[in-house]
Length: 387
Image 1 (cartoon, rainbow, N blue to C red):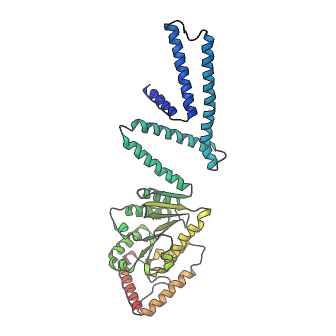
Image 2 (cartoon, rainbow, N blue to C red; image 1 turned 180 degrees about the vertical axis):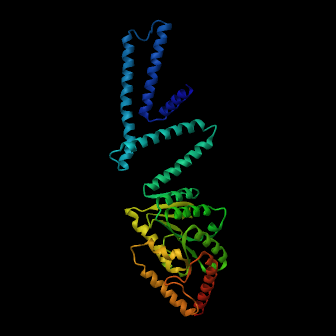
Image 3 (cartoon, rainbow, N blue to C red; image 1 turned 30 degrees about the horizontal axis):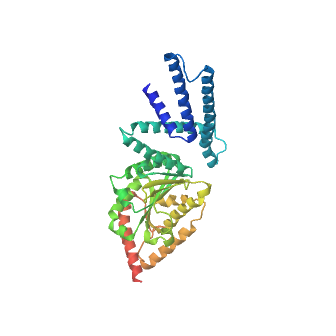
């Protein structure tokens, strides 16, 4: 009963804060109610009403007021209905399917219930309303993004989205990583869970996994032991990995408007990246209007391959699958030009592949090959500076 009374009071408050027509309608209804009550009480107490000589006079007045009420209600209801459906025209929707209509009705009901609950708890628990508004705002942002084929979530929700992507896109997973060696090393980050999910997809669904790590010369020299540990864990998870030298990447590739930290799912059905400026995890899904944008990420991956000096055998076997319908001759030519320069400057260097300088065939070779890479790269650039 108290709940019903509370709802009626809230409804009455809404009426008094409504538009003028609705306010007039409310006053009319109150006059009808008070007038009827006054007449009934007067008949009982005083047995007659000096103001009216005949009952018909009272009846006509009340009927007139009721007519005014229904007239106002008719136009205000139609006005509210037009306003509620006007947004459909703005959105370009001419006919609302039943499924969408039921979703809208359900959403409006829940939103109204939440508004009422927030008003009732505002005094005793103001934090509830604040949290509710923040959650609604976040989900509204996600809905807006999904309408454009983009899913953007807070970084804390990254693993949930990542797992959903791995379930839906099981053919390929090709990634690029830069400036995140600490992340892969840290025991407090979600890196282990990340690798566990990838490894599970590799073993259960034969998902092809590749990752290119981009290191500058300074980082490569100072943190060789750390890099070795990270590469071992990637190897165990089933990744084909490559180590690219940042100084070997073309200027226009490094400075294009693409962060060198992204993942291609199923060869470009979706692209995921961590946005550092606002700490959000964003996934762009391929559609007709953004195929050129998706292609730019695939090209960025391809452009990094000639800068890879150290790779494992799994990477050699799978990297070209990122762009299976394109020629990789330009990549091979660039790599072979580099290898020629390397042989001229360091004649004793043993080059183990047409495209790559060093190739790890067995996991136990990783440590030795990383140290060999550091030595070769430092000697190579020392000779370059001399000339």
